[in-house]
Amino acid sequence: MDITKLEKILENKPKYRLKQANEAVFKNFISDWNEATFFTKDLRDKLNKECPLDIKADILVAKDKNSIKAKIKLFDGLEIESVLMRHADGRNTVCVSSQVGCPMNCAFCATGKMGFVRNLTASEILEQVIFFDRYIKNLKFKIKNYVTNVTFMGMGEPFLNYDNVMQSIKILNNKDFFNIGARSISVSTCGIVEGIKKFSEEGLQLNLAISLHAPSDKLRTELMPVNKTYSLKNILKSVDEYIKKTKRKVMFEYVLIKNVNDSDECAVQLAKLMRKKLYFVNLILYNKTGSFEPSETKRVGAFKKLLEKENINFVQRYRFGDDIKAACGQFATESKKA
Ligand code: SAH
Image (cartoon, rainbow, N blue to C red; front, side, top):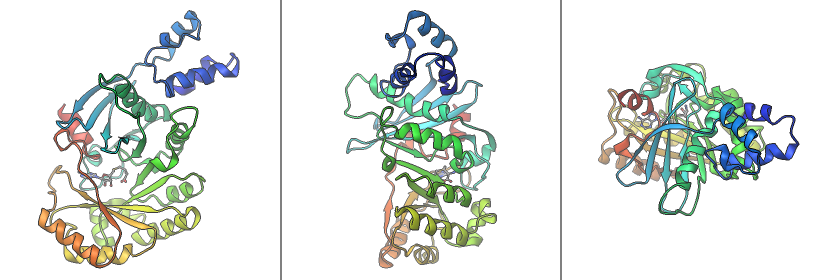
């Protein structure tokens, strides 16, 4: 569904017609314009032809049924992947992609291996959420909520597609449409400083996450080439300015990779960097792709003990959908295999 096309088709109609159409798509999650019975048959036919609502996707459901991955086919045949994670407390989080491929080339990330193909439009970002809202709507057993949370942690670097990402966020947040609270929307970046600065000026209560993954410039540059452009010092400076402006907590993601960034020394260095009031660390278990291995359980335990000793706020991300390779960043390899 192309928002721009929809606006164009309805531009000569009274304003409320566009509102009705948007509500049908973004609130009631119709999948065929014929469900929009408030439009004439002619208009419905025109919309079905010029602004079709169908979303082509293959899905893969994890054994525990709590994570579902969709491989969505875009209009030009390219594919992106998105994941729905159903939490025990009733929240339903969709992890969306912001680009096809990614230009950042992080050593441990499967998407990076694919290279950058193109940015997604705001409609293509929203389509991923709509897909899962329709999925929930059509479940045989009823569940309480539609999509309640959205994280930009799929393929791509959201801050290199800033305008489209923000356009999609504003529609997700709009009370008349998805009505997803800003506090339930998170954007994760590898540390694009200009993006962090712009994000701090949005005036919305959104969540910011930084993919840190290493506590020193030397190691971070080895793992994440972007660190050559934006050093740790510069990133943390822009995060501090963000916090000063927004008073929001910031999450630092740290994926534990065996014998790479999981030593005691790394934990101590990380603790030194993270000793700030509104910082918190999210330890992520590495999902094996390529030549890196996840840290062993004992090592993870020791790493966590050191952070605790240093009074660092941290959480460990619950592992979703191992069997469907639901982890963000594993998307590319999986789609090649499928
Ligand atoms: N480009 C953005 C968002 C996409 S990746 C960013 O870098 O933040 C979302 C998160 O998953 C990032 O923290 C990324 O580093 C991490 N990730 C990538 N590959 C992974 C893997 N194989 N296992 C676990 N996490 C991974």
